[in-house]
Image 1 (spheres, rainbow, N blue to C red):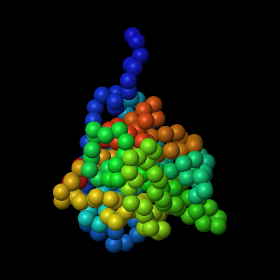
Image 2 (image 1 turned 180 degrees about the vertical axis):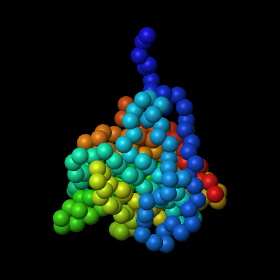
Image 3 (image 1 turned 90 degrees about the vertical axis):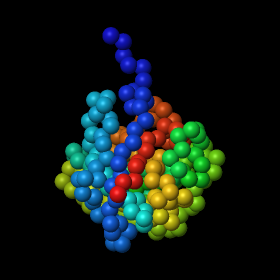
Length: 217
């Protein structure tokens, strides 16, 4: 039998519920409860999931948490080398537009590191990155606008992040309750984990390859 030419996830457009969570943004980010867990779509292709990724929303913004397990070595993180570091990256299109191949001003890319900041490189890091090949860039964020907390655990870590409404160009859940979305968890020891497609496709720069988050009350 011949090998499958295209990954299973290429054949579908995925939408996942993102549940409402009161109180987001009013205090430091914390790990989201299990009901906010996003599906592990890599299992469709027999891939092992090492990261438990969760998402929630309210009118104040979006929250994400990731629990990484199974590590035997410390995470490698450097604030000066964001894209080379162990991290969670998320891409968000506040208009859920799937018929464009280059990002609009409603498309965002954020990165969160469990460590790598501070004098001892032990503080979590949050930053905004540009979407490659974008026709327009989203509004730049202010320093400290993104919020992130990380906790070391035996065999891994838990990272929790909050993206405020002000950092999301066009975020309007009442009129636009669907967001274009994908994520990428990178770990030098454990590998790579994606929400939809991986780097065999140009998902990092092409919003048409992203899935959807449905903002559900």
